[in-house]
Image (cartoon, rainbow, N blue to C red; front, side, top):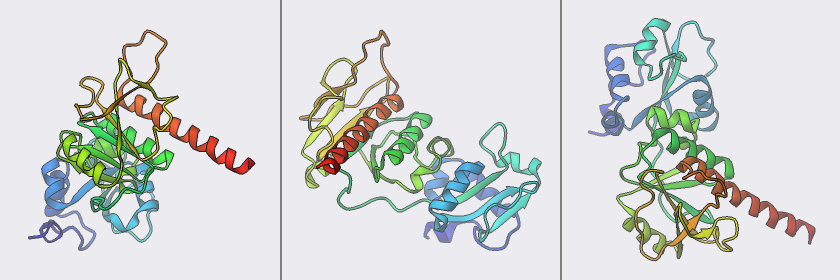
Length: 269
């Protein structure tokens, strides 16, 4: 049976049925999200961004009855705010959530000049922040390995402000599979971040030219990958390290800086 066919009463009527309650509880788990091909997007800003950027992915919405309907054309189930709290993943319930279809996995050759690879980044806040930052700098997709946080969990969605519904997510079992895919698509040079030593991310000449940049968690770093060049962020202070979301922000906006310099030079000519 397909995920859509197996969804408990997801798309008929506007009442909160027992089957829908079961669905909302199931979607709080990774197993439930995989089974139904759905996920929960909670909070007004996240729901609004999803509604504006990918409305076709919204199956239905659940809203506290004291909130104004901001989502015309969507099926909205209205329930008392006290009843909403039992489905909310947050302490202070925002009173609105969207049940959304997970986008199809990305396939085919990447369209970005470089590939950002996250190796087993398990912290939902860090993973979500990186997705949001990648979208901000204009990347079209992120690659990640098994052992990472579920990019469609409620915590990652909140941290990413629903950006994973716009930016493509491509999962691999391990870095060996990542390396094989990179070779297949002609991304020959791989950089692996290292807190201790490596090429300077501000001066490495070809850092964003048909390359991959592999990042891991602050605690464990990225795993080994054959032929990779170590890459580091200079830290003249006495901090031991940056967390992976901070490090990704520095590197991704170095890409923006170089892009603007190139565009400015082209305009001047």
